[in-house]
Image (cartoon, rainbow, N blue to C red; front, top):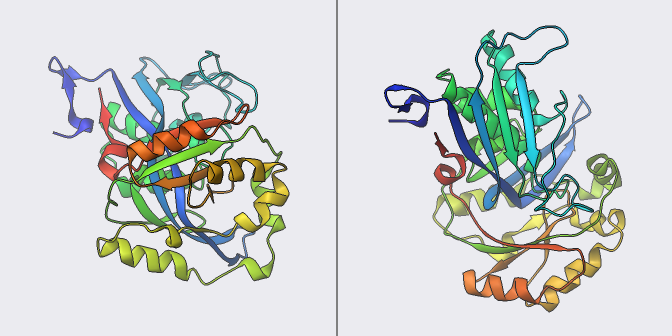
Length: 326
């Protein structure tokens, strides 16, 4: 029985919970700028077990009125990776710009009905680090609300709705490894990779309007035909593991100009024994591959930089990355 059909004591579930995993990009290429102003990307993305937790509870009598909402949200954990202790709890005001709220609203619009919910979000993923916390939270809400209200929407339908919420939301609806194209709206599942251990470093570096600045720093010479992503996709379909030399992110050339001091964290990872330090998404987080959990933990223990947040994580397959429980 699927999570959408699960009941408690013979009645419908009143709440559902799921993890909202972070992601890394095994490859990230930009093919060019589109007529609509967005950039055409090709990227092999991968969910990892550095996660937020999302709990969604069904609320009764929630008809949305002007000036009122059918969605409430409380967040716990770090609100600002540069300042906050991740163990400190903080309430977050509901705004229509929050991707969890946008996701719930998008489902209401798509189904033409009020879907009143209370969302509890426990943050574990550093914010604005390029590893997808907000987008993953949005996808988690789509999964939970779909199950709570037994909407019966398929993964493909949820991903289509998610594309209107945020560029990375469709990927997180699928989870696991996937080839992501377009502006993020085209997602092709890939076979789960062999478990791979990673060290993720989130520097205390914040840049206003980061993504726009990263794209503006690119030149036409940075654009490509997406071959690296296609080649890695084919290798994964053949059951091969991700090799160090397969990892590629076009933003690495400009990241060390946009994020002042980022090279300090790269050098610390290398000094700790990493074969290479890779940029995660549009940054500023970095990650390194390890040959197993023990090596990853030893490497992480050797990264001793003030204020840096260091995590040991492993890759997550699609089923584990999207599981919903009541």
